[in-house]
Image (cartoon, rainbow, N blue to C red):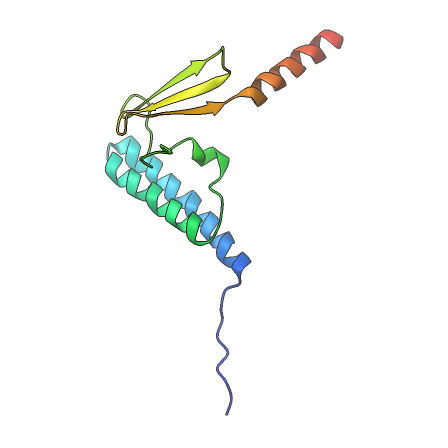
Length: 124
């Protein structure tokens, strides 16, 4: 008696597909938020987070700042969030109107890159 050969995905294949789907879900969230449906955009973010947790995949850096880290809703500046630059602390302050909490994202790397660029311009 012969066994049926079943095609099972390896962990790496699953992770690759999950990261592709995360990108797709954030694209859909973008589109929904711009059209005005912030609740559906939030559902797409929640689905992307669940997918990332299930397959143990990190959400890419480009998407991490697009949702609230406290209530996980999609952030659209001016509609449900406020973004402020704090030059003294070298960070971006994000205030979510949904949960009324602040999140901070540093931008030290950008400041260092700008300093290096100035130093190169003076030297050269």
